[in-house]
Image 1 (spheres, rainbow, N blue to C red):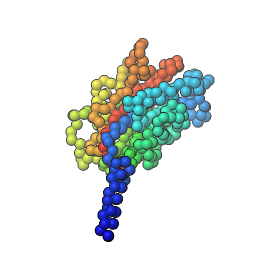
Image 2 (cartoon, rainbow, N blue to C red):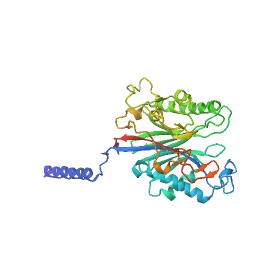
Image 3 (cartoon, rainbow, N blue to C red):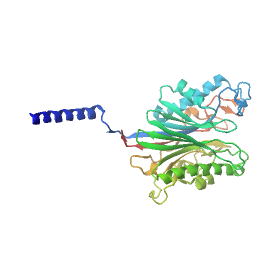
Image 4 (cartoon, one colour):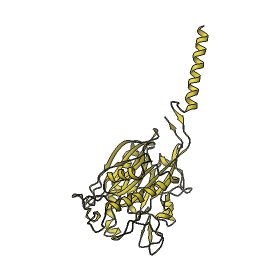
Length: 358
C-alpha cells in the first residue's frame, strides 16, 4: 500500500510539473530570442506653453517670438509620437533616450495622448540648464523596471549651468541590469574650438561614473546615448570618454582582462561612411551616438547585433526640397513655424537577448 501511494504521488507530481511546462507557468523558462531596440532622439525644443520664471523659456510662449501655442505643442507631440511609433517595425523602440525637453510632464502627456497603447513610462531629472531643457528616458515597463535614478552634474570651466547626465539603472527581463546614461553635452555656440573645454568636462564626468561601475564589475552592461555636440573622432569622445571606434568585422578579440573599462562607439561605422544625424551648413554631423561597454559586445546571452546601428530617417521626416533637401524636417526654420518634427534624426541600435526569464 505504501509503495502504491508513493507511486501515485510521484505520478501526480510529474503531471503537475508537465502542466507547468506546457502552460508556461514553470518557475523559470527559456524564452525565445528577443530583439531589444534602443534609440536616442533630440526632440528640438519640446517646451510647454507656461512661463517658468526660473528658466529662459520666453521664446516658447504664446506671446513669444516663436508664437508657441497649445495647438502647436499638440501637433509637435503628435509628430514626435508618430516617429517613435514607426520605429522597430511599427512596434516602437523598447527604450529611447531624449533631450531638449522642458519638463517631465511633457513626455508623460505625449505618452498618455498619443502612445497610450504602449506600456511606456518615463525616467527624468530636472537640470540646472538656464534654458530649462533636460534629458529623459522612455522605456517599455513590461520589459524594464527601475532599480535607481540619479544624475551627474557637469561642472564647466566657466561654471555656467548645463544639462545633467541622467543615469537610470534598469532591470531588463528580470535578469540583466543595464546602466543607461542619457546625455546632452554643451553646444558649439561660440565656435567648436572655443567651446571644446565644456564638452571635455562632460566627457570626464561621464567617464568617472562609467569607470566606477566597471571597476566594481567588469561585466557590467552600460548603454550610453545622447547628443554629444561632438563627433566620434573628436577628443571629448575618443580621448576623454574613451569610446573607441567600432566597425563590425575589423575589431580585435575583445578582452575584458586587458581593459575592463573599454567603451565602443556603435555610430562610428555610419559616421565613416559620411552619414550624420544633424545637418549644419550642408554638412552632415554625427552628433547623436550610441556607445556601449564591452559586455554588450561579447555576452553570449545579450549583445549588440553587428551593423544594426542606424540613423533613422523615414521619408515623412525628411525635408523634400529646397536648400535643406535631405535634412530632418524641423518644427521651426529660424523663427518661421514649419510644423515638422525635429532638426535631428533619431539614431538606434539593436541587441539580441537569449537569456532566461524568471
